[in-house]
Amino acid sequence: MAQQEHLYLLKKGVSYWNQWRQQNPEVAADLSKATLTGIDLANVNFSNVNLSMANLSGSSLKMANMQKANLTMANLRTTDLRMADLRAANLHAANAQEADLRDADLRTANLKVADFSSADLRGANLEGAIFDMTILNNAKRRKGLWNMFS
Image 1: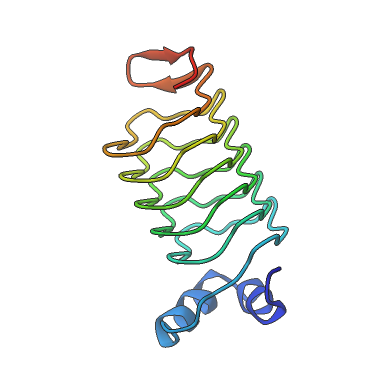
Image 2: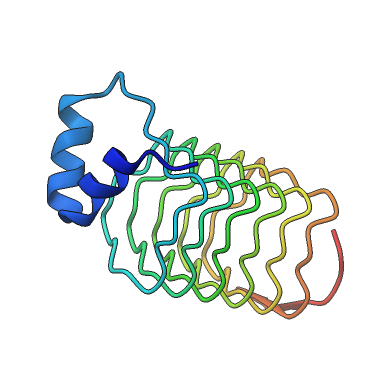
C-alpha cells in the first residue's frame, strides 16, 4: 500500500516531488494501490517507483521518467504517456487500454499479459520489450493496427 508520506509529497506538485526524489535517491518510493486518476503528472520522476496496482487512468504522464518503475497490474487506461521513458519498466498485467504511448520508450519493458487494446503505440520504441500474452487488439502502430495476441 502506498506510503501516505509519499502521496502527500506528490500532491504538493510535480516540481516538489521531483526535487524530493533528487534529494532522496536512496528512498524506495511506494505509491502502490494509489488513486492518481485524472492528474497532470507531466515530467514526473517515477523512476524505480512502486506503482503496482495504482490507478493512473486518465492522467497525464507525458514525458515522465518511469524507468524501472513497477506498474504491475496498474490501471493506465486512457493515460497520456506520450514520450514517457518506460525503459525496463514492469507493466505485467497492466491495463493500458486506449492509452497514448506515442513516441514512448519501452525498450526492455516487461509487457507480459498487459492489455494495450486500442492504445496508440505509433513511434514507440519497443526494442527488446517482452511480449508474452500481451493484448494488442486494435492498437495503433506506424503502419496499421495490431489485431492479434502476441
